[in-house]
Image (cartoon, rainbow, N blue to C red; front, side):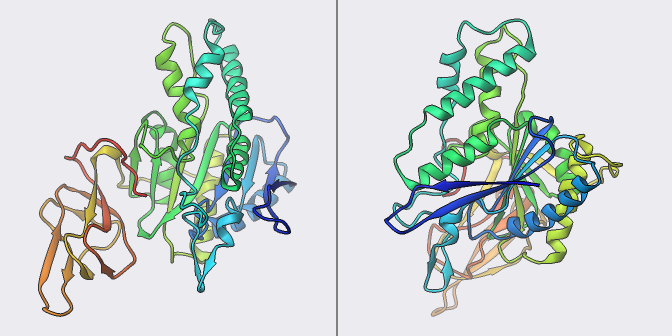
Amino acid sequence: MFTTIHQLPPLAPGSAHSLVMQSFGEEGARPEVYVQASLHADEIPGMICAVHLRERLLALEDARLVIGRINLVPVANPLGLGQIVFGHAMGRFALGDGVNFNRDYPHLTPGVAARIDGRLGADPHANKALIRQAIADEIEAWTPSTQVGALKKILVSLASGADLILDLHCDSEGAMHLYTQPTSADVFAPLGAFLGSRATLTAVESGGDPFDEVFSRPWVELRARFPDHPVPLASHSVTVELRGQADVGHTTGRADADAIVAFLRHCGVVGGAAPPIPAVEASVTPLASAEPLTAPSSGIVAFHVEPGAMVKAGDAIADIIDPISGAVTVVTAQSDGVLFARGANRFTSAGKRLGKIAGTTLNRSGRLLSL
């Protein structure tokens, strides 16, 4: 294992933060995989998964079974990890300006397209190399002005050359699920099966510019923009939602690390016999069809349905109870699907998000991701 430490610019004199990456296998080896944990720093399941994944990768490296290159960032957000307010971790948003640590990443396609226009040829391998260099140049030209922006640039730089990018998150309360590009759903289907995922949500553009879209989206859009030249889909990225925030323990951490290693074996990144891909009941759903459940009124939240359960349109998902009058407002599903996530708070105000269903009948547009 080789460790690289990247220093972040200080927010104030006397303060310092650094980002650590741990690498396995030979530099330049392919396939190259990038894994980062807890970009939302209060989502800890990714970190404990990374702890157990590192143990497995060290053993595989000692056994000379690391064929490709694996870069692991076990703490992707040291800034958010230090945001403790009255004893509570506040790792989703930067407290200085309210920026979501997993939103507003650069859309690279326009700049990359300008750099490669007129330079593509008939050789897909040469085109891939040209595009990778243009992506690297575009990222290098990005000059963020804030400490959070500097963190985002380092993370994007570390991941940009990888063939596969895994961004480990979790929901408030949830079943295992994935977010990825439609063209990457088949690539990550084995990962979802090994993890026991209940749903895969797909979108070319989710509307929030999250971390994972930085990498696979440009290849999809460049292929469409330059149809007369072979443009391979050379980078596939996925956001892995490791259940809920409270699902932190050695049992789940080990199981998730084992699932990722099984996927790496399946992809030829590490050696050894790949286990058979499990048969799982999981939906692949356009993110535009996902149904956000919102509270119509304020009150106590009493759920009828657990994360991961199949629901039908009209099913009662939760009661909103007025604690003074006892009046009950029932929140029902509009679509058949899987309730893949729900909120952890048991008192809500009107308009707040209660849960999410991987549905089949909606066709939303605009900003599809929650804040």
